[in-house]
Length: 384
Image 1 (cartoon, rainbow, N blue to C red):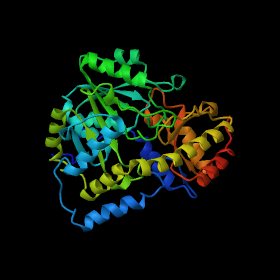
Image 2: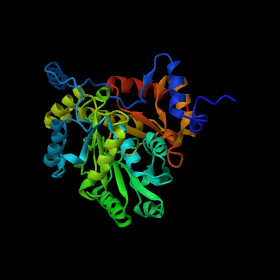
Image 3: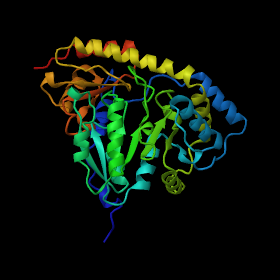
């Protein structure tokens, strides 16, 4: 009897909406792709030049598995300067993007069957990462009428004796919501009360348009694992460099796991990250201003289209557009839009079954000229 080549858990994979839509998009001529969170901007030349000067000077070898000492110290110094948060170098780990850090942390903290609470709508990889680490994802809804803020009473009601952690993401992908300091404080209080870990994805920390960003670690320093990345704020998606900051015991366990997976993040990318963080105040406001302008333009255009609506976007680089006026669910809407206008967005259903299916996510990762063309096309589409 022949054994199957593929592990049982992957033999009947769950339906992947993003893959199906991407396959359809490849067959679409004259496509305007507003689906992917990969900025059209090129990494600033000063970052590129600094990194490759370092490469030419000999930074081409492995670093320590958690990152070079100067990369780690740069992260420590950044948090001290930017947020008045003090971390030990032993708490910091360079990662191959923030998702790598999230997986390492989940693998380090979860026993089989442990539960992790995720607020919907959510960045779609979270669910699979929890499952791959042996955990069980538990979802709680958030709603547009509440600014997509977590209702802490709903959060607390979802906690069981198996709950190990809570994944939060603010500024949020896909909704563009920014949790208020009061929401952060309430989440922190719940985590401390129940001795839970908060896995805080802060990749979009720079994209906080109307208020100053405050990290979750300010409110629950002993219960927070922070993840961030250079991908968005510095337009460095392809460099694959991020970091995690965790209690020392968790970081040490992540080290043991990672030495059997990736060992270390790329040395040239660490060098780029050092320069980027040291020049944050010069480089990041330029990138953020581009996306703020684009999202404000998107808000204006959505207001002019009867079958769409959009609450003010508080942060991130996405618009989570309400399509309930179209009479279609999110998958049917995206398919119709793609077929009739060659404009591609992501169905909200991909970000959660409970609250996502009357929305689509638009990534503001194209120029104003391209966005104008996209909305000119969308206006020609007929619904109801």
